[in-house]
Length: 373
Ligand SMILES: Nc1ncnc2c1ncn2[C@@H]1O[C@H](COP(=O)(O)OP(=O)(O)OP(=O)(O)O)[C@@H](O)[C@H]1O
Ligand SMILES: [Mg+2]
Image (cartoon, rainbow, N blue to C red):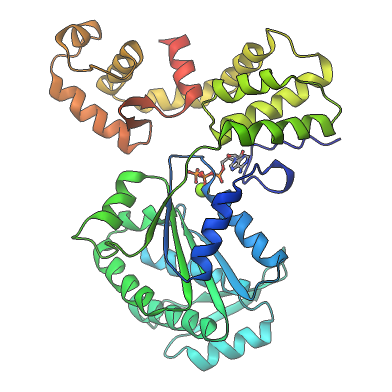
């Protein structure tokens, strides 16, 4: 039997655990055409949740069009628009109909349409030569509105925080908001992980998207949901593992979806060879840290000397009381202001999160640090 746990990409099918309430809540927002800000720390399962709900919409044959636009790595308004156009075939897969719609609703704009050889769906690419970006954005948004006249649609902008990094972010956000506000039959899901950026975009009175979406923070999956999910998948593979060991795994990885999925992937392989023993957890964990050695070494090398010292400070003091003279002397940092600066930059890099105390976000990086520094 194929390993049901998967650690690359999104959790789908049997590798998707529970989230029943979250699926229901997100669908309610979609059905009410209420815009949503879906956010969490890295790798908590936001994209997987969106994909799952979109899948449900298709399976239940609800008359709602779904568009998923991944903004990861986009660096400008132009790339934003291009990505959005590329995904429009999700609303109309018939090339002739799509072409007809484009011709009837797009003006002063030329575009190319080609067939994606993998998906066999039409892909639109606007030409930026003759028109300026705001005109192309206008065309895009009017086209979306046109689609929404026939049926409800939901558009997910994943990694939406990227927009805040574009050179002319402020004016772009303003333009975008003005369209979003007019689209009463469209639910926009703004999804992202860099909380300081997203919070600034939606919670600061100065910003265009201030209070434009319902807040939807995504939490870790609860232990009571993990246990039956894991139990079933191991049982389906004729592999034996006790409930209390499953609980131990969930606790070890603090209920974090990605780490638990990853650990179970390796545990599945391990249990094919050896039964669970007291050593199993540590053995797999060690090999997972070893696998990540190069990645963490590269990350460590990109940090400044004071950032490295600050990470040591956090590790030695469990993220608390970081400004005491004693703690600073211990890691050889001269002033508290250096710590303040480094805490800020490490948080911006998403290496640290603040939750009462400072936490090294990647559990394995923390373990790697403990072993290597
Ligand atoms: N419901 C779930 N059940 C089991 N595992 C999950 C679930 N959701 C996510 N995962 C695990 O977590 C990993 C990350 O999921 P996903 O990419 O959806 O998170 P994300 O919050 O969008 O991450 P990022 O912040 O990088 O965009 C997946 O590869 C999968 O292993
Ligand atoms: Mg994601």
